[in-house]
Length: 599
Image (cartoon, rainbow, N blue to C red; front, top):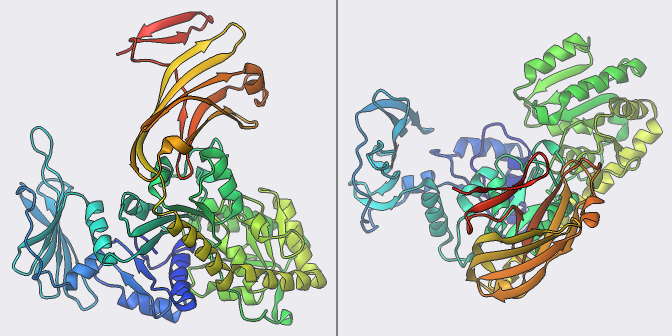
């Protein structure tokens, strides 16, 4: 499992990664570990606390290049030719960090008279430097590259890289020692390190813990989520993309194409061995677990409780978590006179235990990847009430059976369901029992089976996958007829890296998508010729067919073209052809044809 790091306080993604490694190790007998890339001298104290809290198995190791090379025997390694010596200029001593034993671990030096880091040095326990990370001063004609050098105890360079990503990937290859290895990446930030890794004995699977669209927007039209752009820009670099729900996978396929590398695997969330006694539940007490951040939409949760106490004055909601909105939420609670109703409890590593005696849980998020807190609530027999958002709630909750779903933003509806759970013990007990029973589908056995299927499919395709790079589309011609019909000629090119020829199994699809709202239309293009490194395709766009998807007559319809193979897909917006003849055509404000010279 790959994370960038393990913070002292973390959310669902990190918790899931730690638990999944434990599940693989203890439940499936696999040799599983967590890999991180943050500069850190060790995790001993942190792991001791996490194991005490039951968040990671005692058998799981956390591996990190800074920890690994700090104790590795580098004196046995042959010297390598490093990059040319660099002018770091005058250095000013900066921040130092120490390890758990009080010994120097790292020192950062700044360029004199600047706020720019010039050098990071990492020290062994004996005080010798084992890694130098240099950021040279800019030079005339372009600055020299960054230099990361691994050093023996006498200062000999035994490894050198000009980018941090190359250093990390080299360590991963060394770590795998040529053995067949699967890297399951949970962190979008870590994906930038692992995505470019290409080794015949390693497969890489990227888990999307959040929606692929920012802010829970339209999955077809919305802006891609920050930090995920590089993942979706080159899907072909991944052996597998893993979604937590079928709903998100299907939305993704509509936008990017249907590929053999896309899988659905639920997050694991082990339920209690038996449902807690219903008699111990305080029906009017609610629990919400979540970061105090805009995505969680906690102002709605507070306003829901404002409505609830109008019918059930003794009802309360305890919110566990920290985040940037804490003061804003406290102010809203005070403004609405809810100081005796809504309580901000801060971070508590054992907060999930509160579900054992709560009468309900609440989720009012704007978007989620799956909604771990709902699964956790059900696993403790606590009835959840949730906005029916993308993604997760509808795959976890069967409305009225093992919880309640209400429309996103429906404060009145959520309050009504909470009031029902507070005042109708028979309904509350029925849903509590059903919630606990349904949570078996997120247990270790069920999720391990899903991972086994995804990994088996990934390995079976490893040698036969079509791998290409540099996929491009060129508009060869665009002709507009008087009846509104548009004829396009498109050329797709690429560089084949390995596997069966893409030309033999590729298809070209035209996409007509109303910009504001409306149905996405997909229709095939005609392939005129196929070569080993390209395909020429033609298509005729019928205005009547395209326009019927638009929500209004004024709505623009964007035309795109998608090239799809078994293992890859890439979408391009269709523009006017330009460059070859030195002219580009466009329409004036009066509807007249005009041209202008290209640069």
